Image (cartoon, rainbow, N blue to C red; front, side, top):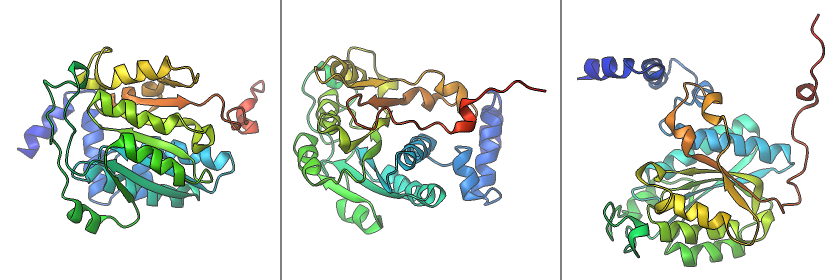
Amino acid sequence: MKLTKTLEQGLTPGLGLRYALRVAGKARLIPESKQLELELVERPHYAYGLHLAAIEARGLGYSSVTAIEFGVAGGNGLLALEEYAHLISEKVNINIQVVGFDTGHGLPAPVDYGDLPHLWAAGDFDMDIDKLQSRLSTAELRLGLVAESVPKYLESHSMDSPIGFVSFDLDLWSSTVDAFGIFRGQAEHCLPRTWCYFDDIVETVQDVGELLAIDQFNEESHGRKIRRPYMLRANVPFQPAWAEQLFQVHLFDNPRYTHLLTATENRNLPLRN
């Protein structure tokens, strides 16, 4: 079975190599820090977005940054995010706080067609709260409807640790709209360019689900935008499909939006000998 899987993956350019490297990584033939760099971890989209967020936060003078997962379900993603936060914090020399938001009891009931009721039902992706809490070491778990838990979180969130990476896996359009409240508050709650991963856009079209929530956010009067970084997939090793699910929230009114981040040597093009 494993041989068949290997052969099938090898039919796709780059995928066979990536699979072989993943196997080597699990066998500890590749150092953990190098696995992060090559996106060979279980959730490379988490590691990639969080790594870039940590680098930007450090470049802007922060000593701490926050990563959020909306839609924790069983907790595998939150545990992975906690693990990557530990590795990246050592690599970049920055503290990383991890927070997970979930109802604790599965999905709320879909509101209308925009919530994709042909795919999801109330109660899907239930959580064993006690089991997950026993596995977490540093991550914080915020339970309840995001329409209520997000405003409460922002009341206590320190802007000394701005939000730099957010994974959206709430499945529903209505819940995603409510979760975007994290970007509607004071701009300093977030990095000027906050990395986001949208898990469910592969299941949708522009008129429903997460993509509809993004379009509606971009039309709001605050002027902030959620945009896809162009050429990201071409610049990520092995051109993974998940690169198309990474976006950035641009908080143009953040006082640090215009701070220069590019090193001097990268802003020169001397004539070659």
